[in-house]
Image 1 (tube, one colour):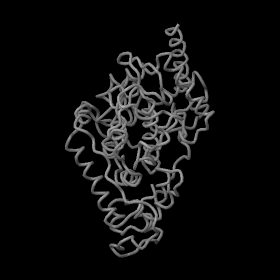
Image 2: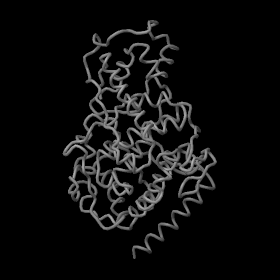
Image 3: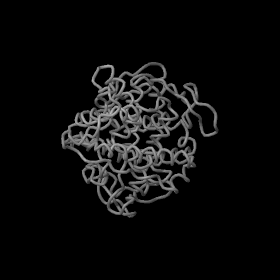
Image 4: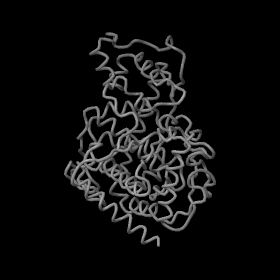
Length: 394
């Protein structure tokens, strides 16, 4: 019976694929912040996910991710492959409910204390299981069948807490300083991407990490950040190399799927029939609110505090803000405007993010030198921002 149901959905998916290949999007779904979903909306999402797992689809995706692991990490297929992978998951979910869309987890909002995130509450996906079976949230009581029969586990990297992730300010800086896909991909993959997987542990820290629905929430957020970066003049930016060292361009074929990389580059066209809540913000000087929108915080506070940074700091870490502020005539002509101590007393000092573990670096066959370079960059950013008394509202 399960095999019959999977075959039925497979051929339905083939029809959807052919339809999209022949034209554009007849309908576009919106991927929303998971915390914005009402209980009824989350129940609808949960129902689809449970049925997908019962029919073997979580096994299907874990198998793909595990088999293609070396082809989709540590090289520049990372972003386009995962966009296509999430779309595959979403389209299959739409066979159960045509309104199904993968939510995203705005992890930057929770970067200071990830374990306290409402996403990890029993209302949504549940929290730590200390390496044992997850007992709360969406996947409580589920049997995962890849690579063998087991219950889903999580094992936070600091006991009942997690080490801090990367701040909205740092990721915002990365998005401004890297104009090529290769540099942008490395700076994200070697920072936020890894810290979330490692922080949660359990299945999320394995090569078959898509067993945990946190994977989909996480990669939807990374894709959202990539989409925001693309809207800043990088809509068709694709460069770098694949696992074998060959150059990647828009005509390169994605691992497993075989689609052209170029077919994934723009949302709302070709097969990419989705968008993100809030759209994109093309005015980079005020775009920090697009990177993280924390509940109970005024994201414009971060823009206000960034505007008080010494000009030399803006030029180094936020070159687009410096350029656009200068074009608006709102920067001080001095090379440094001094401490921010006299500014509004809101927010807290930045903290160091968690480094990638040696085991994680080895599992992915990352360039250890490059990983260390990104980690040093992130720590230098924290040091310099704290030195001028920058206070983060996040």
